[in-house]
Every structure is written in structure tokens, then in C-alpha cells.
Length: 574
Image (cartoon, rainbow, N blue to C red; front, side, top):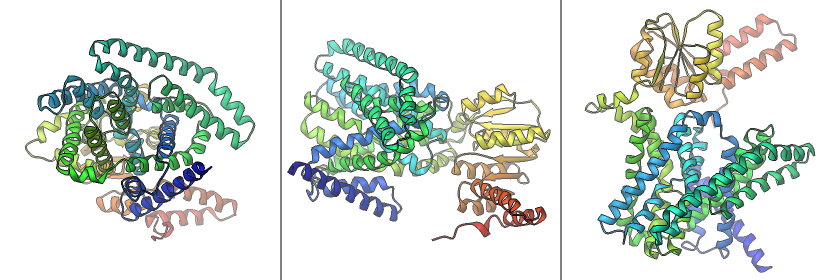
């Protein structure tokens, strides 16, 4: 009974500290993730020692990882994955392989590893990045559906899938002659599991979820979803594969059924609660004493790891035809050591592949790289822009901005350029074509380009904010430019570069927030449209009509609101 009460008390302390830490981080304009990590350090065994059931807390924290990956699986779009499938498979394997080879080589040559087996193990630990931290940061920045967000998540998911193989061959590092056999068994396990998962997702899971949903009981539906998530995760863990892999596959199982959105809405509160517990548990692992005693070494390791991984990832992303800016954001977004590296490090300690001192150094280094990840992601876009403006490197970087595919007339003029072919862009194109205007679309999504090919719409495949792409679009002879990009930073950069090429061009831009309306207008956009306000205006239009207001009066009200750039209806700043 006392143990149960202690666990409840510990959970209250951890969640309360996480809430306070997250609040303070938010008020200081820092990622809430940083607050969770610091709160774990404060209440943990190396802080004020307020917890007595740390093992149970860490076990519960694993549920947070499971829910994070389950929610990602539900939201994950296989259609969107197709545009980055090459880099997800070949690119991630290349990244993992190069990291292992380079780390093994350097550590053995420098004498940091006692032998090749230990060097390979350290390379495996450093090769993994943090799906949980990057996912959380992308969610907070609303960048899940950006190109760099999709590439990062694709590589990270591939790394999680590779974790099972790495765990399977670790025991063989004590006996290198068995690596081939262990790898074969691990691949067989993955193939069997995926085959069973596909069968269940087609014939069993949809019917099961539909039957539970038919009861119209929120409790039963939530229990069924949780059971599916944790059940599949436990199966993969039992097979020696990663728990995260199972949770992600469980999410994929229901991602295409009618009840996917309902399942996601039920899991999100649990995901956020347990995710904060997970990040706090990482903070508990940080030993300030070890950090202070080896501060110089750890700073060197953190610098070496983060710059080294970025240096490996950058050319890989560039080699797949993506722009320098995208490559920089991706390389500095996944250059940390992942949370699953904790699992590998613990396994290596048990197998005596590393010493206790090395294990503690890995924990400290990993924790610091996780803390720095949101900062790297924040500065990466401006860093990429700075690289492209370097005079000595301008010509070299320029060739990486070359549009990968062109499908447009040799001579084009009097056309309207539409940047982005998502839901908004598609509607714009349909309206323009229905009125007989010639359209040229700029898009970097393979799935979207396939639709453009099918409908025989002229397009350029590349980043719309790339100077070389814009030169190919012949903006100097275009009638107008409509910007419908999902990324605010790309929208601003595109607007700036487009007006530099064609100063008199009519630009209509989509705003993502209230503050952007004035900014984009000052930058030179002729019209700035805020989708939420426009939806509200349309609802107001229909409402006033139903109340009997004259059509002329309604249009005058709406036109006045648009003319003053929504100032009269913008929410008051706090």
C-alpha cells in the first residue's frame, strides 16, 4: 500500500514540476521541452531527491514515447511519405552506415574505443536521433507538414525501424563471427511482424474499431485505442524490436480508417501528459556532478557529435536534390543523439561493451544535445540563408537550388505564378483556369507534382523561395504571383526575392498569423489574405443575409474590413 501511495506522490511531484517548468520556459520564450528536462533534473536523484519510485516513473515514461509515436502513425500520410521515400530509405541507411563507420574509425584510431566492437557500438549509439524531441519541436513550431519536417520525420522513423536490427546484433558484437546470423534473424522478425501488421490492418483492426465505435461509448473507444497502441508496442518489444516501432505501426493500422481522427483526438491528451513525464525522466538522468567534472570533455563531445552528424546529413540531403536551405534545416534538426540511444547505452553497459564512466558520459552528452535541439531548429533557416549569401560559396550552393523537374512552355508570358499546390493552391489554380488564365505552379512535393502532371498543368519542381527557381518562372513577364505556402519563413523569403526580380509584380500572399498581415504588406504584397478571417467573413456574410440585411450593405461592410487589412476584427493584443 505504501509503495502505491509513494508512486502517486511521485507522479504528482513530477507532473507538477513539469507543469511549473514548462510554464516558466514558456514565459521566458523557451521551448516547454526545456522546462520538462530541467524539472526532471530538479526533482530527480541528482537534484533535490524528491522521488522514491524512480524506476516506476521511468516505466510510465515509456508510455509517453509509445503515445507520441502512435499519434504520429495516425497522422502520418503515406501519400506525403512518397515524396521523401527515397531519402527515408536510402538516405537514412546511408546516414546510419556512415555514422557507424566514421565513429568506429575515429574512436579506434584515437584510442577512445578499446576495440572495433566498441567503436561500432558507439557509432550505433550516435547514429540515432530523437524522434520524440524533434516531433515535439515541430509540433510546437507547426512545421510537421513542411518539406523539411517530412524529411526529418521520414529519416527518424527509418532510424526507429533500424533500432530493432541494431538491438538484435548487439550481442553478436561480443562474438563478431555471429553478426550475419543475428542480422538475418532480426530482418526476418521485422518482415514477419510487418506482414502480420498489414493483415491485421486490412481485415481485423478496422472491423474491431468500428464495432467499438458503434457502441457510442467514449470510454470503450478510448480503452480499445490504448490497448491497440500498447499491445502492438509490447509485441515488438517482445520480439526484440523497439517499443516505439510497434506504437508507430499501431498508429498506421488505423490511420486510413474512418475513425482515425476520433482515435487521435482521444489519445492527444494522454500523449501530451505522458510525453511531459518522459522528458522529465530524461532530466532525471542528468548528473550535474559528472557534467561538472568532465565539462570540457562533454562540451567537446557535444560539439563533435552535433557538428559531425550535421556534416554527415547535409551532403546526403543535398545529394537527393533538395535545396541548401532544406538540407541545413534537416541536418541541424536531427544532429542530436536520440532518446533510444539511452536504451542502446544501457544494453551496451550490460553486455560490457562500454564502461560505467563511458555510459555516464554518453547520458550527459545525449541530454545536452536534446536540450540544444530546439535552438538549432530555430536558427537553421537563417543559417541556411546565410550560407547561400556567402560570396565565395554562392556559385557552389547555387547548383543545389536547380529545379529538379520542369514542365512548362519554352516561352511563357502573361501568366500567373502560384507558389504551392496544397489545398489552397489547388483552389486558386482551378479558379484561374476556369477564367482562362495561363498558370505556372511552383511545388516541391512529388505527390503534388504527380497531380500537376496528370492534369497537364505547367509546373516547376523545386523550392519556391529559391532564386534560381524564381528565375525559371519568368516573373518579369508574369501578371501576378499568388503565394500559398505552408511555411511563413518561405513566404517572406519568396516575397522578397520575387519583388527583387520583378519590382512591379502584383503579389497576393497568404498570411499565417495576425502579425504577418502588416509585415507582408510592408514588404510589398499587394494583398494579404488571412484564411481564418476570410472564413469568418464568409460566415458573417451568410448570417447577415439570413437576418435580412441588404446585399449592398453586406458587401460594403466586408469590403471595408478587407480594405483596412482586418484591423477592425483582429483580436486585441494581451
